[in-house]
Image (cartoon, rainbow, N blue to C red):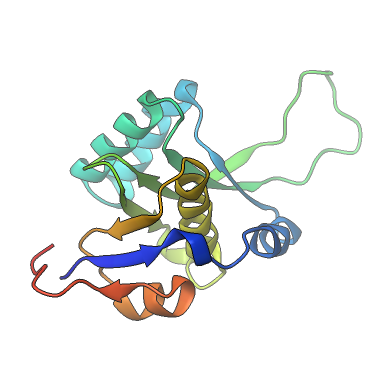
Length: 164
């Protein structure tokens, strides 16, 4: 698989994607360092050990470079306690600046949640964060689905970057 290049100064807007996901009770947000072991365990279960390590690295950086997608349970009618929070189900993650500065990845969405726009939300959240940090370009390392990246953010293949 090759690497891909993305211009961060011409990204599609993030807000409409987040709004659409919120209507389906999906939230994209930076991970919290207190969730490090939970996120890493989830990634090990659904994906790969090296991806879990990448998430741990991203959660240890400042600013945090590991984003998560969670499905939020509908709030109870009357919370029993003022500190009760709705339950959250981790359904996806994406990182940047973990393998190398300026690189996006790893990223993954739980198999039964794919096709709902969650991957797009995670990708755009990370790339917009990189743009806010004044990166002009990002490299998508070892792009497994080049058509998705080309269609979603205008990424182009980097010649002679195989195997990524």
